[in-house]
Length: 86
Image 1: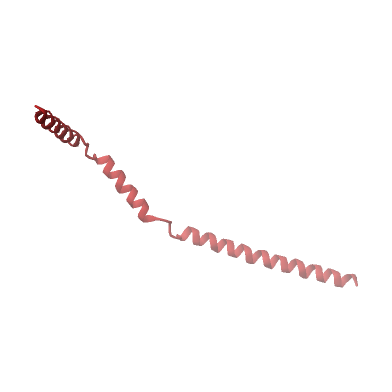
Image 2 (image 1 turned 180 degrees about the horizontal axis):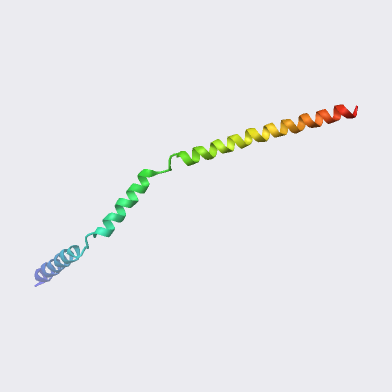
């Protein structure tokens, strides 16, 4: 009798484990597509420097050089004005 209860309990546990493992839901097409999108985004990483960024840097450099030239011109004008006062 004691062995029958143990064997019965083991069979019930085995049946429950089999039933629960069969209940797992497989991924649908949206879940699969979502994972593929996530992987693609991870592979992309940081965006490379494109033409817009390069053009922006060129404009920044040109503005810096122009600002330096304007400052030099202002200094030259001030120096010339000081020379006229003497």
